[in-house]
Image (cartoon, rainbow, N blue to C red; front, side):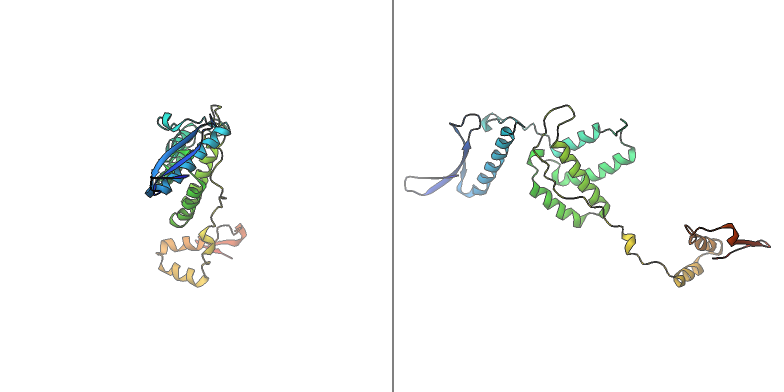
Length: 236
């Protein structure tokens, strides 16, 4: 970064520049006003990233003046294409339920990442989303969203299905996806007194249903059921 000055030595602008990776004898630069110092450093960071992709053989570097529209797909575009083409190990498509779940999760993710090109999604952006989403989303939605984001970015960082190189050098998702603990574990078991009071509130024709429901998984045997004169007695 160079500070340009006028004849009196007063700063007038910033010049951000770096070595042309195609011709090291030349520089690539861009001027910014004094009030845009942050933008100047951001531009340098973005250009450095493109040069890194070029040096690793992942993406050809193009001079800023010769760049057209960015061909890097956005997260929204890549995610849609990923699931449209996805097939299970047996070659079949995802079920309707799975597609609906993916749509719900992608709507959440697209609010943050949808319009951002894949190579502009940084680890910091992902970590900030992770922290916020963990507090705002339900446990199920957060787990599925975190898993889907990591899955899509990992796919973008590996060789594509058509044999072309990875779109990004590495996935920015470094977190571990942990299955949330069921809230049922925090629910205290119902007591015998609570069951009796609940049964008393049931209509007569439903009351037996409540008591019988307690026997599910209890290994009830025939010898425990005694029929006598149209009545049944269950010995517990």
